[in-house]
Length: 386
Image 1: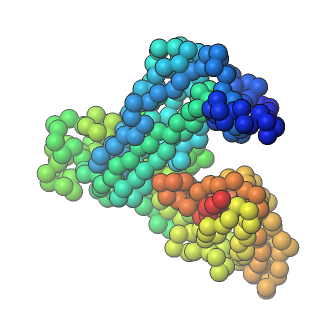
Image 2: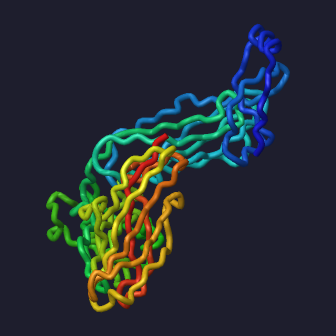
Image 3: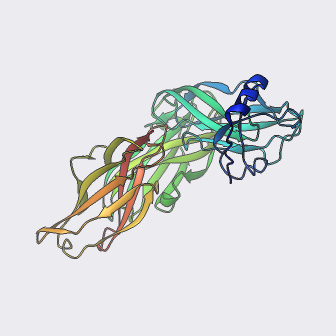
């Protein structure tokens, strides 16, 4: 996409001041909107040009109280009050827990269309607020931010609230369970269990079975089911987290999500001043985009396989993170140290990966030649500011 600059002489500026100025975005492919909006420049508005005019009656919606693990949606009405077709394109929401859709077809003059925004309450209890930007070819409203907010409260009828695996020895399996209960209705159906992280979908087995009311942990429940989740051998060493999604007939919880949390432990682990064992993550913190930032940690390999185990970088998310694996150091026959430097390069654009409602943690995955530990996963908590 080309962005055209405008050079205006002093004499012309004087004429423009008398006739009025308009701030618009000039692009060669404005109508197509195949790329992100161009740079804003100051040019005179053509009085004879037919343009779209984007109008949203109320770009802010209050969801109110939501149970943790549930989803809600709202449709914002976009109207075209201009004289040319209005094109909409979805930007990047402030969190993966927020999704939205825009119509593919242009909105004709005088027409309207719906933009549906869905929010999944996956963070801890308390207030939340998210933004879903919509780009348009209206030169005076090239970006319209749809805002949603509300408060997350503890879900009723789920005990315990999480599928918590705690520590799993590498190569072993473990099963945990939760009860899902209907507190206000006499029927309960649950089906189609899905894991939010595709990389974990083949690492867990899920079983759902009905439970007699007398055996439910909450005696006020009318109906209930037990959800058993088994972590199979083969999970990578390190922390894992995700959400188990279930389709139910519960009011306000047709798509119910239950957190899955745990850690696989073995002869390979991470240590360092910026390593937080409790959270299982490198705490890189907030860095300025113009300066960048670095964190250093050590991977330790213990046991009889220490000398022969090698690490190879498999994946990095987000890709802006740079990972530098340095030469391994032999501490003793059964202990090897592998220094690793994690870098946010200078010039990185703003982003949030603090494991909050604003963004998931960064993640680095290594493959290893260890006979029992095939992968090592390291979370990185950081944000980049302007």
